[in-house]
Image 1: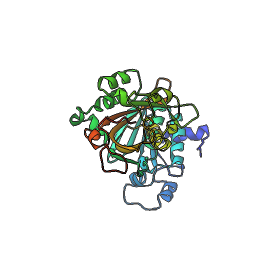
Image 2: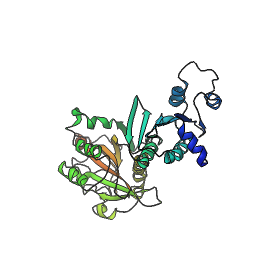
Image 3: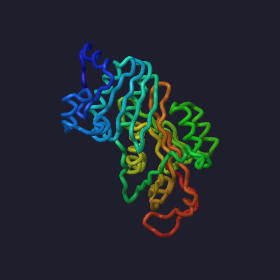
Image 4: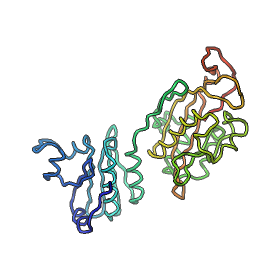
Length: 322
C-alpha cells in the first residue's frame, strides 16, 4: 500500500510541526480525533504520542523550521504500511538534514544530510529480526558484536575488520582485503553479493582455506549461489544469514557449531567444526550490497574435532569452514 498526497495536501502537512503515521499507514495529527481513535483512548492522561510510538507502531514525523526532518520510531513495532507512508513524505520534505531517533534498549539517534541514506537506514532498522534455524547439524549462539568495538575486544583478531566497517561507514574498498590479510583472516574469509533481480547471495570471493567443497571450490564456487554449495543443506542454511544481513545492514557475530561434510573426503563421516564468525554488510560505489564473512576457529576447535555421532576424536588437522 503506497500512500499518495495531492501537492497542496502534502504542502499543508509539511507546515505542521508534528505529524504521526499509524500502524495502518494513515496520517493523523496529535490530539486530533483521528489520533485518539487510533490510540483507542479518548481522554489519555499520559504522554499519548510517546506511548503510541513506543508501543503501537506509530511513527512521529517532524519538520523543524524547514531545516531538519526528524523521524521517531520503535523499529520492532513498525508495520510496512507505516514505513511506506513515511518514505513517501520523506522524499517531499525538502529539508537539509534528516535525523532518525529510534528506540532499541534505549533511545538512539543519528543524523544525515541525504534523504536516500535516511531511507536506507529506516529500512535497515525496521527489517525483521532474523532467527536462524537450529538443527541437529547446525547450531548458532549469537554474540554481541559491540564487544569488537570496545577496548576489551581490541585484541580479538576479528576486531580490525569490525573497526574498518565502522570507520568507513560500511563503504567497501579493496583495503578490506588488506586488513583481512594482515590479521590472518583472508584465507578463511568469503564475500557474497547479490545479482540484479535475485535475492540469492552468490560468492564473489572464497578464501583458500575453504576446502569443504573440494580443492578447486575456492575458484569453481565463484559466482554461484551459496545455497548451491556441494553440501546443499549447509548452503541453504548459510544463505539465510547473508540475506538477513543485506536487509538489516547491521553486523552479526556468532559462535557456530556445525557438522561439516567434506567433499575432499567422500564416504567419510561428517566432522564437527566450531568457529566464531563475523558477518559485515557493505555498500559499494555502485550501490551494491556485499557481505563479508570472516571466521576465527575456536582455540580448542582442533582438539574438539570429532566424527559426527561419535565421542572419539578424529583428526587434529585444523578444519576449514565458512
